[in-house]
Amino acid sequence: MYPYRDRTAFNNFILGVILAALAVVSACRKEETTVSETPTSAPSEKPTIDTAPPDEQPVPPTSQPIGVDSEDAPNAPRALPTSQELRDWIKIEPVKIATGDKIDELITDTSQRAFLKTYRINLVARCAYAIKDLKGDVLFIETPTTADAFGIFSVMTSQPGQPNNVDGSIRAIDTSGGALTMFAWQGNTYVRTKFTGPGDDKSRQSCEYLFNRIIFNTPTMNAPLLVQIIPPQRADSSKMWLVRSLRALSGVKNMTLKNIDAAQMDTRLGLKGNQTLSIATVKVADDEPDNIIWMVQYDDPSAAAAAYQRYRQALEWPTNDLDKDSIVYSAKGKFLIGSWTAGQESIQHLLEDLTKALPQ
Image (cartoon, rainbow, N blue to C red; front, side, top):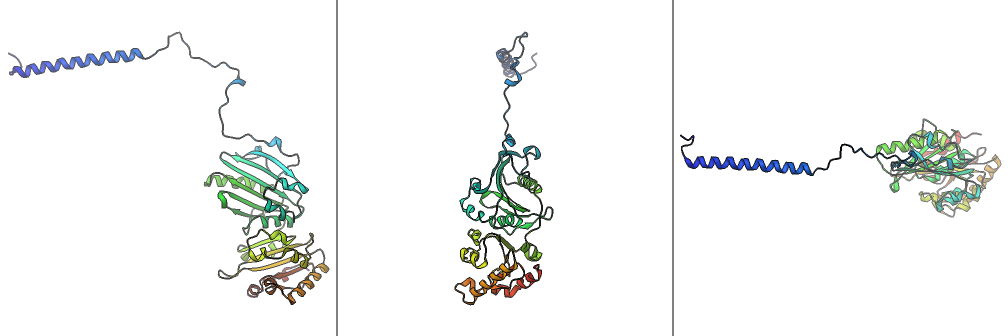
């Protein structure tokens, strides 16, 4: 007896077994063909070894630049650190120095050259640092006096400037033009570093580290007198300038200062290069124009008294809007003070407080 009662079912079972066997045989042959096609090395072969001398071995590529500190000018300022003194930052452009009438070689902005020459400058230095895709271009100016260094800081940035309680410097930051630019006054130096590259928080921290490292190496000195006299509660909303000539204000954004006849005002105030004129715009109210006060420091009391007489005479017969809205106080020792916004000064009375604070 067959296990299947129906012969047709039995025939189908036999056919299925035959087809399954053929499939197994075909798969085995395919596997043998694949294995035989895989190349193999003879047992006696050994891997090839590069036996070139070490100095001829290929150097792996790197994105880290090589420092150029050996190319620094011999009298490079000590405040500009070498690559070895920094963390990750590498000097990619050596320190170049210019003095005297050659500072134009390092001051590339032609609009800045004219007003910078109204200040006393010992030297101008430039160099650049990099860390990966981040670059910092440094402009370093050293002056013979604190007043000149602060003056350059005041006209080179439109920002009010904030005191740094850690090192005594005054700093400002600008983020326009797709770059992060940091400015600082410290003692007899002005520093501006323009950073380009990534703008993430980590990059910002790297920029601050380099900038702090430069400022840390510059000597600390007292700020100019008007900076010290302006009350702290008003300092945050005040913008100050210090000039030896009104010509230095040609590039400022304040239209009152920008439109002053520089030559006429220099003559009236007796600004001949040795004197300093400090100016501050002090906020009155959100819907009010700023109060603009000023102070000139002379070499002796007689020069201050003579300037007061010239100014009083001009205000007796005012010929322009500036003089119509001006006020000047009697000279006190070497100092002469006034306001170019008499209406706003009548609200704040800053000149009275300033007079009391001035030394005899």
